[in-house]
Length: 278
Ligand code: SF4
Image (cartoon, rainbow, N blue to C red; front, side, top):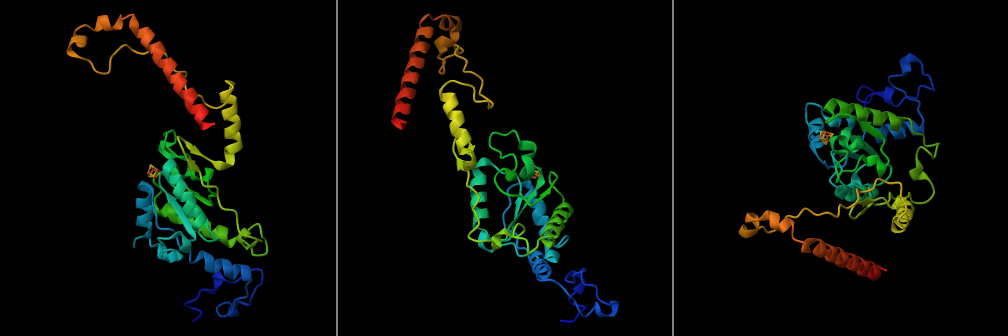
């Protein structure tokens, strides 16, 4: 390969100055620099998208912006061959479980780019009952790209920022490249999908709060409003006759008694279920 085809300034280490006439043909460099240069120039992103941001990611890979300039055009449909996870879109509580599992299946070294407001912090759906308010609650994010959605140019800027981050890593510093340390790296804990998503790392805190709640003490988390015991006196099936005389139904003296008996039956059922669970 001639020096015109291989631009040596990318691999040349400026710590070792060379005479100008030699710079086109000779490069003096370090192992770290050439290792980082080859890694950052052949990042293979994982092929998946979650919501509208994914359309912009697809646009970035198309000919107008052309991810292949970064050696990233080979989007892999398997985590085993991917170096980069671009989280592009809204992360729901149901989806975070497979996302963390896929991340754990990627080989080291691996990187995460949170694309858009949703992946970075929940975005417009932050308060949604089913939305994770930021992928970084579960996975280590390397680069955040703001926007709703970010443009392809913004994504390219984020990818260049990631390349700069990789350039700054040194083989001599194990904190930079922990995957070369002793033993396998720790997998990210896979969240548990229940009535709400549970982060296994917070299991102790959740248990403590459950104990406090069972004793009727304040748990210092946002509580549901207390149950309103007065139920509106509208029957689920309104017959023609009942519809004709709603005042009589509302004034039925047996309703209070029936409601009390129902609540008592519900309490007995809950107690039975709790005993069974123990
Ligand atoms: S950040 Fe905006 S464009 Fe991206 S997934 Fe969320 S709502 Fe859609």
